[in-house]
Length: 204
Image (spheres, rainbow, N blue to C red):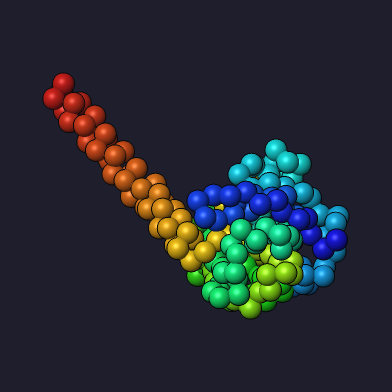
């Protein structure tokens, strides 16, 4: 059993891949191989802190693996034979990721290059070309954070599989939400600070 089989959960034309995922701290290129035996890895679910699932906090590299049952693709009909399905991935914090589909690197965040860079990564969408509808899909996600960052919740925040339209829509929503968190929230805090400063000046 190279990885756990993920149950399908419908979400507006796409499948949420919350788990169960296999998880291991460390780094080894063999972990991208679909035939790799990960039965001894920890079993985790996305959306829940790793520390609550028996995984100690860590820094550096870690991998997620999941085996997707081909029956989960039946709701997409003949689409897999006509156009590529798309994979949506959203990371948490400053983590960087690279995604492997059946052992082949299919997509990555900009900071996951030969020169690793730590910054807030935007969500990404990856086309899944050359997959067979009647064969399992093994997803492997290589993650990295810098040595001064401690991961407790997990680098991978959300993963979904769906058509181009549904994934494009979800990607736009995730990017807008991230922009709100990174831009609007600091603006509100700055406004409140100015109000408090103005009030203090008036009282003085």
